[in-house]
Amino acid sequence: MCILIIEGKNPKGNIEAGIDISVTPVGDNKNTNFIFNNSGPGKYYPGGPECTYNGKKVPAFIRWHESASITTHILVEALQTLDSYNIFNRTNRVKPFLILDGHKSRLELPFLQYINTPKDHWVVCIGVPYGTALWQVGDSKEQNGSFNIAMTKSKQELLEKKDELGLYDDGLVDTDLMPLINKSWSQSFARVNKNRNALADRGWNPLNQALLLHDDLRATMTRKEKSTEYNLSNNIIIPKQKQSNSTLPSNDSHSSMTSMTGTTSSSSINNHPFLTSQPDELNFNSGQSLTCLKAMLSQDQLHAARERIREDGINGKTIKEQLQANTRLSAGIVFKSGSTRLGKTVFQVCKENHEDKIRNEIKKIKKDEIQYNKNIENAKKVFEKKGTIENMTIRELTIVCKPLKNKSDGPMPNKKEALISKYKEWVGRPPPLFNAGQLENSMDDAIVTQVENDNNDVDDLEENVICEIEV
Image 1 (cartoon, rainbow, N blue to C red):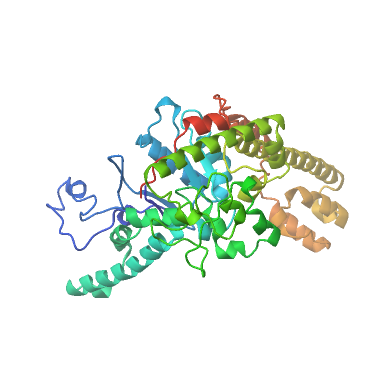
Image 2: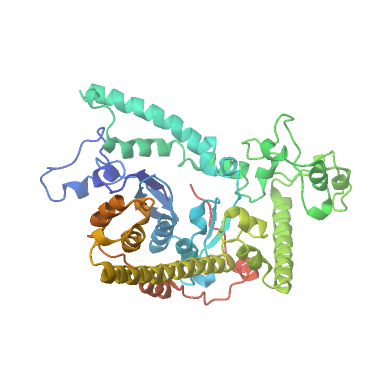
C-alpha cells in the first residue's frame, strides 16, 4: 500500500484527486457521473498510486498532517485499512508480520493497543534502534533515490507539456502532485525486481542482519567484538568479500552476502566438521543444497527461540522489569531489554506508563484545586475585613489577586498601584476548570481490554507467517 502524508491541517479533495492534463476527460462535466467516470489510475483525476496484492487492488492511503509526519494514529488507520480489505489470510491463527523502524509513533499506546488485540493481531518488530537511514529500504537508491530522479524528470516533462498547451505561466500547481507521484512511483517504488535487490542488500529478505556489515557501523566495533565474529558458538558466518573496498554486498542476486560461502581468513570456519571441502568450492545458492540449508537454519532458529523463551520464563519478568525502569519507551530501550517485538510486554508497560501519567496529572489537578479554594477563602476574608481594594495593604492585595492570576501573567507586582491595576484587569476572568473527574472517567474508558489469547513467542514462531513482500 502506498501511504502519502501531505503537509496541511485540512484535507483538500482536489489535491488528493489530482488533475492529469495529459488525459482528456470523458463526458460532460455537468453530468453527475463526470467525476466518478474520470477518477482512477490513468484517468483525468488519477488519485494516488494503486497497488495490487494477491489479486486485490489497494488504493493509496492519504492523510494530512501539519508537519507531514507519521503519527501513531495514522499508523493505526493504515493497518485498519489493510484489515478492512482482508489483504492477509488470517485463517488457522496466521498473523501478518510487520517490520518497522524505531520512530516514536511505533511505541505509543494507540498503535500498541491495536496490534495486540486478538481480533486484529499483528506481529510487529522494530528492525533497528538507530541508523535507520542505512537500514530503511525506502531510503535506498532503488526506491527513494530513483523516485527523486524520476520526480525531477517528471516535473520537467510536465512543464514542457504545459508549454505546448499554453499553460506554462501557471507553473506547477497543487493538482499536479498526484500525476507527478504516479509517474515517479512507477519508476521507483513499483519496480519489483529492483526493490528485491534493495530488500536483500539491507537485510530485510532474508532477515540476515546485513546492516552490521556496513562500514560506518563496523568502524565503531572494538577488536574484541570483531574477533568474536569468527567464533562458531556465535552462529555468525561472515560473507566472503568480493570487493575489498566495500563490506556491503552488490546488487547481484547471487551476491556474496546472500551466498553462504565462508571467509577463507577464518580457520575456525574452514575446519568446521560439516565442511568436507573448501568453502570456496561449496554452492548453497541453488538446488537441493539450498533447500536443505534453509530447512536446517529454520529448525535451528526455532529451537534457539524456544530455548530463549524458556530462559525468559525462568527469569520471570526480566524484560518487563527492564522496560519499567524507564519512564518513556523508545526503540533503543526495547532493544536494550533484549527484544525487538512490540508484543504484549511492551504494550503492557506502555499502558501502565500512560495510566501512571494520567494519575499524576489527576493528583496535580486535585492539589491545584485545593490550593485555589484556599486562595478564594483567604481573599474573601480580606474583603470582609477591608471592604474595598483601595483600603488594602500590599500584602492583602496580593492575597486577593492570587486566585485571579494565571501562570502566563508573569510575576506578581509588588507595588500597590500595580496590584490594584492587575486586580481590575483580572477580576472579570472566568474561574479555572479542574477536570480531575473527567480525567478519571477517561482513564476508566481508556483501560485497554486485556489481550485474551495467551500468545507466547514460540506460538508466534510456529503459527505466524511472514507476509510475502510485494512492492
